Length: 423
Image (cartoon, rainbow, N blue to C red; front, side, top):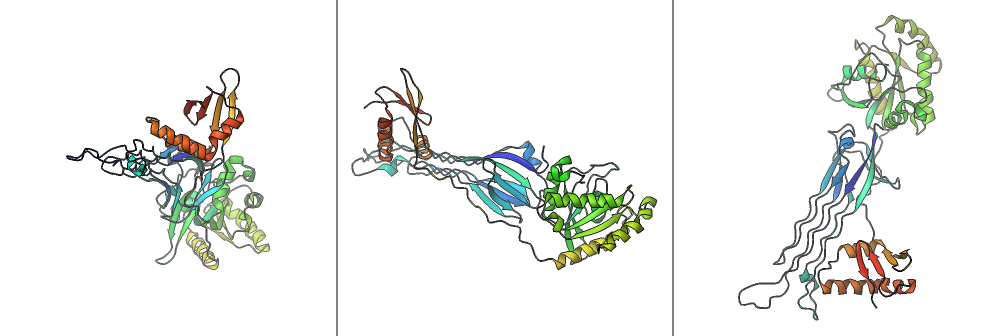
């Protein structure tokens, strides 16, 4: 299971059905049609929320549906529109079309919205079909079905500072010591399994958002230890604080291993500004390794600070240096160009396929516009059937069936509607 990816199903509301009704008033024996239209179905709207940090909610809730529009009523009353389905996601959530992989929205700012699905329009009531030759139509339309889509959500944390390092390097301890975040802390690797955010308030004017990225291991760039999931979060951190466990057997090798994984993963991670922090200086082992570690990095003009996250000695110097690095960086615009509404265009094209041979051949007509037309048609009156047939003739469906070889008595399928062919 991916920690920062999940697929969900979304569906816009269906339009309400139109109404067949006639005026019924005293002294008006032949009142005209007054059936109202159906209401529009609800849209599906994604909203970026600063109150959410993970996608855990979507692992328990996979289906989201907007409500349908209300049916029309007599006296030209239009049905109520369906309620919008608002889906709140964490800041930094990317929404993809699960089938094509195309990005639909990139939600990075609090309150940012993306309207991905538009509800089906309401069916027209019989009052809308009055003509000079048909003063009392006895048919109406069904509501348009709302589109459905499977989307993939991918979370990339947005933070000023990202804490990276080997498992058990002390990242969660540093986050807990400098912010109000309460990460799970224990003396064993992989205590942190999900990234956490915390806000560091250095003074009245200086604040920064810090992310505790779960520990990386060698092979993370190839996906070992859920490495791809963790590395993706680093993409949106402006400055990296590389925390090194000074009490380990070989701190320098650990430092090099993490940088190698950042470079192998690509996406510019190795080029991000990095501040190296040698942690656990409260332990004798770290004090022993510190001189050689500092000397080696300074040979390559790499600045390194020492600290103890457990005792908070040196943490303020680290945070002020990180804040200074942020002020020296140009502003970053994270938002991609939005796709506010995913439009499902009506295709004019259709196909005629013979599905079964023998004595009882079946012909199926496929096409987005044809299927929608059938879904919105009612078959409880001869007038509605005649109207559907006229529309099929205008689109060329009837002639296409003849050219395909349809014979008297053959079955023709239009979406879920089955009819028998008669010339």
